Length: 255
Image (cartoon, rainbow, N blue to C red; front, side, top):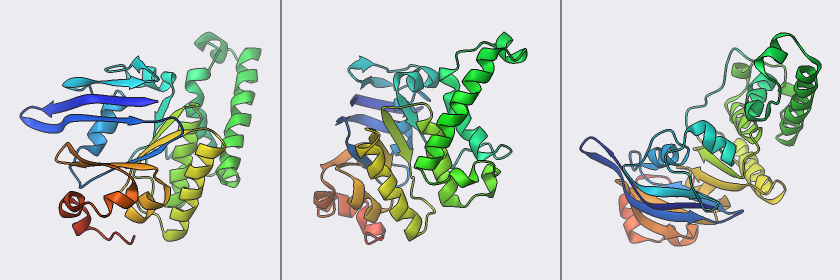
């Protein structure tokens, strides 16, 4: 599904990512972990076209997508959420999700301005699909609420809903469990499993909550100072001396 091949990213004299390679298989739930500053978000930004790598390639479904714009990468079938929730707080939950359908709009600016029939038809279809996604995530009752009025956990769900509206095959989640209470974290884990099993989504996520990682990840890649120090099963990661020294020794591995 996704192949990162010897990717390096330098910012001036600082090497943020150094010769990183890994593959995410179809329908896999793959975790990317490591200390703050390890290069995890930089890697996400390279995969999604926010920044270009200094060297190396990114392949999606066998196609080289290195350096494509974020819009083009979304159209290829990759969507993401962000570490810091990025919702339009002045808009309703439903309106936030509708933004995700932008790539599938079939009417033009002229038709929208003068409210041609095709405009209303498309708007109705997208609203129905948006409600369906909200129902799937269990937050349909908040459709008309202002996005900023929701709890932190539900705001995370809105952001996931907007990403799902782009109809991705690969979903990137940047610290999805951050700030959640245990109940919300358990609900998120169930949601991720359902997305894989019922919606056939492949998931790549960044996370610091090791209990969450152990619960849902099929495989884990650990970065430290931009380099890969471990790749494998979560259970093996927890026993790896290099990972313990670089990362796990400073966090609560029990969640």
